[in-house]
Structure formats: C-alpha cells, structure tokens
Image (cartoon, rainbow, N blue to C red; front, side, top):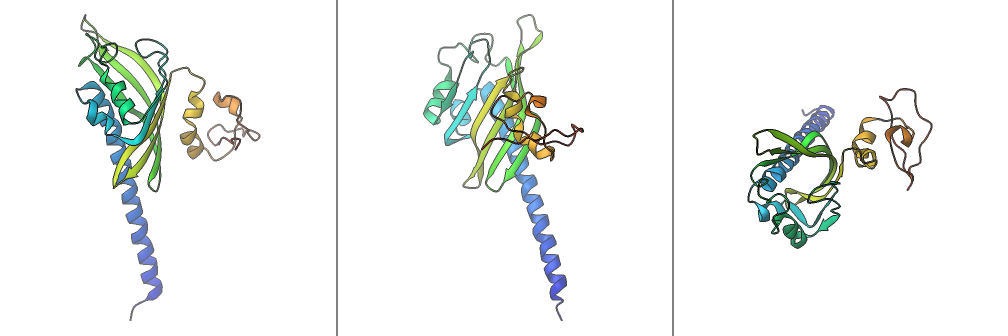
Length: 214
C-alpha cells in the first residue's frame, strides 16, 4: 500500500532538488554570458556581441575619460551594432588597442534569479598591453545587469555601469546589498543619493537592508 504522506514528502524533496539544479544551471549560463560579453568585445565579434541582447537591450555606461567619456544609453540592436563597430577607430579598434585589451565583466559576481528574469551585480575593468610590454588597468566600474530568458536562452536586457568612485554605485549594487542584508540601514551609510527613505540603522552593519521610496 502506498504511503500517501511519504509520497507527498518525497515529491516535495524532488521538486526542491530540481529547482536547486535549475537555479545552478541558470547561474552558470548567466556567468558564461558575462564572460562571452567580454570575449566578443575584445575579438572581431560585433554581431555575435549584439546577439547577446534582447531586441530592446541596452547599455548605459560612463567612463569619465578617454574615447567613450560621457557615453549615455544605447538601446536596440541597430544602435548597439553601431556602438560596438567603432568604425572611427577611436575606442577598442584604435591602433594600439584592438586585440591588445581585455574586458573583464564577471568580477565579484552576484546573480539573483526570479523565474525568467534575473539581476546581477559585478565589478568590471579593462586591461591593456602597453607599447613597452607592460600591462595597465585603464578603467574600472560597478555594474547592474538585467537578464531575461527568451526561448530557453538567457539574454541581456540592460547593463548599467558607472566608474569607480561614482556616488551612484551604491544604488547600482542595491539588489545584492538588499538580498544579503535583511535589516534597514541609513542610505547615507552606503553613500546613497537623495530619494531613498530608510528606517533607523541597526548597530551591526553586517545585517542591514535598504528601504526605498516607491
């Protein structure tokens, strides 16, 4: 005779394990997507790079200096292709840059998955081989990525990047900070800008969360 209670518990365990495995597979695919993003920027992979995005995908990046200083948001496949082609040779294809730089995207990576949507935070930096043979870090920043599963494949919906030292960085990292810290903290303690409402801070900074205005 089948023990219905035991069968129910076993089914719940199997479902939980399946969900855990799916989550690990999703995290791995998103992590590989971030790596591929960097590889295709560094190599002659303009259209394949664009294909990593949803049709309405976007990048919103600030560098503060160099060829891309002041770059705002670029959205949609056509605009993304024009951005990455760099036909003027002023950025990644500038003589001395092309095939001599490495874009690192998945550093300090934290991925948060909710069904077919996901958000990730990461640090990024660019390494360049100098004419004298030395290596130079040319830029570093903080990222918030949004992803969507489309036809079984994870794609980039948006990337927001700000330079190291930008006061917006605390807000960019908010998905990870909120996920990790369950108690409220004053926004000023995390360098947040105006427009964020917070409860009284706890004494322990290792156990906090941010409360935002709607």
